[in-house]
Length: 432
Image (cartoon, rainbow, N blue to C red; front, side):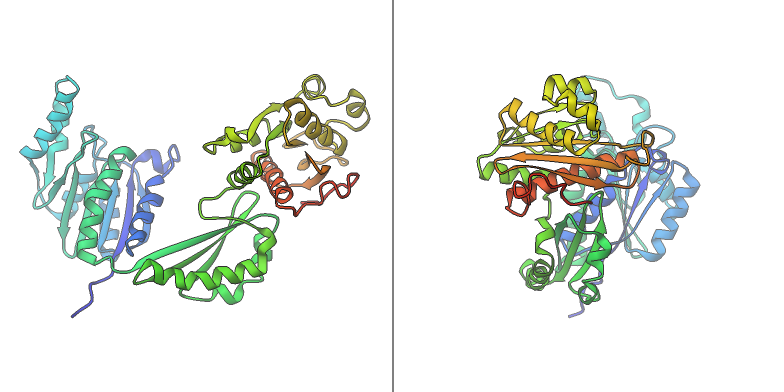
């Protein structure tokens, strides 16, 4: 029996707002991940503005290299919604009114007690020979057309409308045609405290493999390695992944803090909850970003007591308890101030651990003695306190993000017994 042809999918995001950067093309990631779960691969991503000639050209390019094309956006009722018009012209087919699709659009407005505007009739036009895809959450039915060996799917742009149509119609249709017999599984390992180049230099023997593949990705203040395997089943994929993951853990165990959807904030909170510990933070240069990272994790209130944005020196002294003599002698950006921020917020909020962050995020404010990127992270806990001096590079936003992640990394090390906190209370800590 002949094997089914492999799926070579292409995603097209239609919308000027995407091309000019006003909104993020989140569909590319989401649809790619969904297809990969079923062993179908996306080969190309593209985006095009609301221009009929350019949309036609994009479909033309896709038709020559892909056998499944999924376009999102441009199915609305306005004049600049041109996706199905462009595909119809490219395929040389007419647009015809579907009474079923029209009834679906009309019922959407009826459920809301409103008459359907005449311009919405446009949304019930279907490419001749194609099928319309019901949209229970909006007024834009989708479209499916098969032409010259290519499966075309047109889906609306709003995520709440696109997702159920993708799950209930597009994926089943593609699996039915292409088989979806092979699976694709990925394991993501999260690293901190080590650079991408340092990791890359020690994994050349692993990155040269075809199945599984090992690929490094840099992030802000951390990095990840993605191990990806394909096979006839998920278990077969995991059989390929496990020995590679074990070897990576053997080489880099001190720097691996989590897997898959873990983040520094989530693993810290999990460890705090496991040990019955609590956390409070005092932030200067990061301006509340550390607290934001923590409170973005559901259930963070079980371990996170709160934080203080101690931007002004008066707040550092009156709210957190930093001594005026410390600020006068050493300045706001100093080892001593970071230590007192951590110790002060721990005491004021009655937390098991206190973290204090102070530094110069830039772009101005630096001096030869205290340049932009100089950050001190104070960590106070049951075993004492210590301060870590960081020398960070990047924009203001990057320095603030990296400062927060370094603070979480140092706390994670302490929670796992890997830190020098308390062993050298006068120590300056590592530089990063």
